[in-house]
Length: 258
Length: 367
Image (cartoon, rainbow over all chains, first blue to last red; front, top):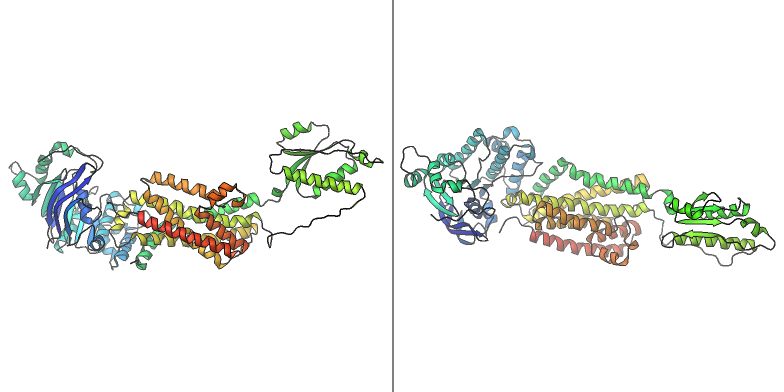
């Protein structure tokens, strides 16, 4: 059984087709990376998989469950770190972990989790006083509290210093070695190349390339020696799309067909 | 299923955050005490029940004219300021913003002492639109009548006696304390929840919480529990301050408890409802203020509702806070449990409806 099965998934905001009939699957213990420029539909896709949004059409199964209808069951088995994670101002990372543990009804070693995401030095600092990167790491720590089968990481390393980024990579590798699956979005192509078993590149709501990083380079690259995933990504998506900023409903990029 | 464990966990994080931020604590515990002290001090002065009256005695301080002024003074209804004879009285009143005055004519004493006595007239200056005008005219006329009877050597056949309708006499502070308890019951949860719910929505904290087993009903129950707890503390502090500083008479009865529970229950839900249906933090604050401020002034917080015009009294009866304050007054002042029961039932129904709407419209996740 696949961890995630998506077929012909669609979601529109008014006239904007944010997700336009995509299909993919993620198997157990796999790190799957969803790449694409801002506004490509990655976050909408992830939120549908998490049960936070309802799809317009298509089939979605996550750990064998319908995320929208069986969200309450699903949420006990998944970990999520949303983009730009925020928490209550006057709570410390340690309290946040214990809070989540109580909500999930599990016993955890808060210090061990903090150590795992390299946040042990800020265990008792109020959330509002943490740096952007530290806040992001609180989100990562919380996504691990319920010992999830599958973790959704939406741009987990954005704004992190190189050392903290490596810590997140370590967390992802450990999850993989524990046979947990990870769905990762990122703007750092080297990260995807480094971590992902499978990659799907999205643009304008469609998947325009998929496979292992090596397969994508082989299929879509120009054939030059030493070409990276980033080179292929830039070529595929085009300079025009890379200049786009903003989230799907805010700025609709001009429609382009591949 | 509602889980006590999850509610306790949420309550612990929320309560700690509340205490640590200190702003909330100020508004829910310190600010109501400041209000008690302020309003108590403003309205508990002794002079507030007397009407300021300017009196000009043009009769050379004759013993009869001084006796007349003494008689006015003895009624304890006027605060008399004497104006020198010969001054233009109308101009003097205007210059001193006076709305009431009495002029004793020259020859007042000699006319009355003459045999036979000659009629004299005391002039009353007043503004008929002023609410105290009736008091000045009535009291002066009564003193004049007493003078007439005395001079005629007669004595009154018909007399009056007064019976107070309340079993004991109340001071303004006695009404103020229940009113301000109502104020605290309204403002502290209402402002906080409007703010929190719109901010959590903006910061996607609700979305984040929706990915845990915590349900929105549990989240709401945790907030209600916290504000009930704060309200109980605030009640003790406010009644304590009222008694300690102004000698307020408070009847501590079990009948108070339902109002201290239902009040926060209702206004946490209402604040949540406003915050959750608003598009932004700013618009939530505007809508919150539009609901809170009129309710605050029209429900009997600072002024008794029965002193307001009839249409405003009707309006007051649709405001939930009215039933909190009316219920508290019924229990704490009058011991009128029939009235308190009606208030309690209305409040319970309103609370259930608004709680239901808040849970219904409060969205954990998008669609």
